[in-house]
Amino acid sequence: MADLTQPKIADRIATTLRRAIVAGELQPGDALPSERDLADEYDVNRASIREAVRRLESWGLVKVRQGSATRVADLFASAGLDLVPHLFEVGASVEPSILRDLHELRALLLGWAAERAALQADPASIARLDELARRLAQEAGRPAVLQALDYDFFQELVAITGNRILMLFASFVRRIYESGQDRFAQMYATGIFDASHHRRAVEALRAHDPVAAGDAMRAHAETALRTVEPHAKGKR
Image (cartoon, rainbow, N blue to C red):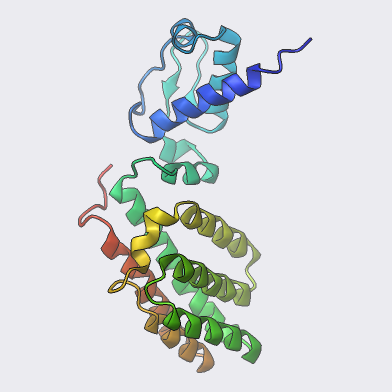
């Protein structure tokens, strides 16, 4: 009979090693312990270790060479987008530079989506955004509610553009933020979040003014950078 526990054991080991790599406890170029040492450390057989290493390799986190040590890869050069949520796992320490990178990407997406939406929005779409902007102005001091409404606004802008790849990517980014609501709650604190940016964006869409729409949404997104340690960019 097949060993039905092995995949679960391999998952647990691979997840533990992935967290060590993402946290920087294992640096690019570092050699993983040998199969024998890992098997002793986790009290499992070597087949489970080999399966765990194969998973790390499939995630782009290690490089396996026959006859040589398995070494940690540069995850930012070799891993895929599916690794991004693991950079923000609940309870994990996140480098300020990674948070800054995420917020900057969000600003780019919001600005571009608003510019395109200003050229394509119809009255019904503008009415939906207008209602969301109104509700955002009413919900000051409720970070979880503001976050949900903010991303509803973002996804409505993206839907107006008609760019289906961007729709998928916007949903992906939203999941990252919503999976760690406590981590990002400060973005919606009084004195940082300002619903007037959304109102200005709606008015720009109504006037079919892409420059003003993009500026309003970038200004909104850039408020998140005030929640990140100063001069964090480049601290890797």
